[in-house]
Length: 332
Image (cartoon, rainbow, N blue to C red; front, side):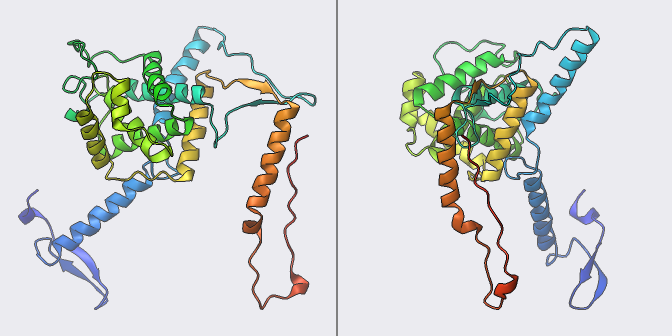
């Protein structure tokens, strides 16, 4: 619809207190209206963007639910047992815990979960297909000197292939499990901001760009671009620099990851592992580890003791003053 075909718009004039007819063709009105419209759309997109808003559902978890339901349905129809690994349950004498926490995730299983999330992204991508950016096209920017197959964009990679690629980068660069979670946050933020899909033709370079950025933002001792050239022998520093630059531009230079968003991705990855029988290893709670947990509990209690103190007004009466009672959690 052209500008001259637009109908007048009714707006509320606060200075006069009546509803007036304003034409979109009015040069004094149109820019303001368009700015407000774009601002509203941006705020709505931020609210429903899982990489920015802690209440929005992660994309990978929603994409995986279709396959999980189909697997359960197939097992039910064919009368096959689910084949889950025998779970260990705690008792009065033994407590089973895994060694993965939100602050210190298990590296191996976190990488497996991230690879599984990427797998579901590729498998359940938009069937109509979205724009494929040149910087991520492996045919235009190959990661190795070996010839790219003509059908490189037709076959979805297996979850094991994605895991090996991510594990190789993390092992060689000595990256942490927290970096893997931030990598997934940046990946989903890229797909949302740039309105692209991850597919067989671009998944390696998108994952590489997300790892490159996450390692620099998260880890104290960042890996230089030239270090990745030592891992991927056939890639140049100029290509890595350009990949990082365009990745940042597509993210609109938004590299902030709130703690609430990080925690959401961590627990959603655990939910993904649970739904796909990818259980974290459970070990009996030993006396040594119980003492460590007790020490950590006391350390956190001392650290946040001042923050828990309620603010008291000078006008408050001491007779009606009640303080909350805090019981320390001690595991022995």
